[in-house]
Image (tube, rainbow, N blue to C red; front, side, top):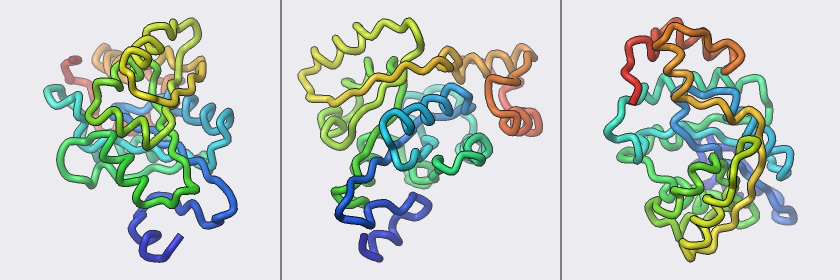
Length: 225
């Protein structure tokens, strides 16, 4: 990788140095409001099962599909993601989407990453299987299909037929890998609801995140959308 391109990576990991090998970079996108153990298990299982070199967590700056909803500040979500991933040497957290102005669109992120990394770095976009159903409606979905392999994390017993059918009917040539992840019964919205109800978040998200939420009083008075 040339020096100019390396400098432009900012806090993103440097990959692609050896032109004789292929690198696999996982991109875990999301609002992370808050991050929870389901996100972490999905990222770790994707890394292991797919042989990813690293997984980068990218908190969305201004999530496209949550423009009319109340979302915690990008700095709070970034801080919680840092705390949750700090003990895993295979995880990184990037401000890439937070620092980009405007609404956050996946296609813009993947396009920028494709320009930054050499061709021997393959991109794997990790998301929930529920999102796979909607991804055909995302901005420039056909470009997303060309830029990255999609990894759909599913919970045990989840019926994939709807997701598979949505992809088939779209006529877009998505490359999708589905992984069953036990911890995905957890959701960020459920954690926020528990906060409002005064219930414990212990064992649903790392203790460091629980402490951050308590210290900063996140979600306590928040109306759940």
